[in-house]
Length: 357
Ligand code: SF4
Ligand SMILES: [Zn+2]
Image 1: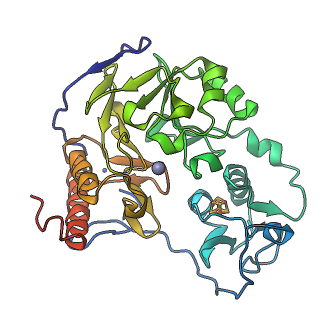
Image 2 (image 1 turned 180 degrees about the vertical axis):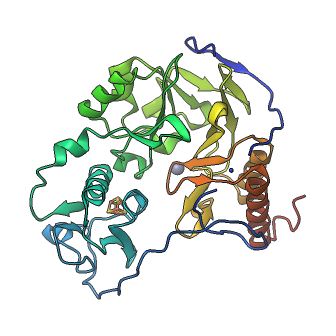
């Protein structure tokens, strides 16, 4: 694909249809699908003192953790990252994470350390300084599905400035794309450099920009953000998307305007692997699909109209900025789930509409 600087051109969306699932919770009513969520043994909630985020107490071990080396302290912001990165170790108890099982093998320990390094608030800690932390640092960025999704990486190092959002890297022969901003660390930057650096930094929306300036300085990359989401701290981004798109980045990538969560929210469709990176437009939480109504800058109907746009897109992976990745069995399943979700939300907000199709 042609990926020269600022090679963003207007393009038209074509209807398309994909083809394959994995684990995810059935989130909406009325749809039979194969979604499932791995069950994590629950542990009993323990009464703890009022959880203030200040003081030395905040950095102490929550009593909800099981005994052992790893623990979560009281500063957890409940971003879910550790629970999907290391579900063998972390679970949710009392609106925060806790260790329910200490890592019992090398693989589980590595995942727990990767979660520790990715926690946006450094809330995951160990009683003893981990001698293998350097080895864990070297594993970032982490390939997310080496066989099915070659060249797509989870950057880790979630930033509190981005509310703990996840950042991804797509390796592309004509220029790598960094999606949203991880916390800047030179160690991660060096690893990304070994993978070819960053040509474009695509910012899904204004909330998840974190250390974009540092990444831009390090790689001289072109940052892309919708003009509606440009603020003082992002005023110098190289490319500001105007209007409602869609836009193409070469032949492989389509950028789709999905206002709702913010006016300038944009999803990235990576056509070769049929992945839609959704930012905060549409999330997958432990409880199911979510549009985070309470944080929406636009109306719920606007957001739902943007979800409906996804019915025309050819993808079977949904990778959000927060929460879990979803692999749909095929386009039919993707569309059934999205339609059901939209209908359910319209029903909940029936003052807006009762039928959408
Ligand atoms: S990654 Fe950190 S902040 Fe997020 S849920 Fe886990 S312990 Fe809490
Ligand atoms: Zn957001």
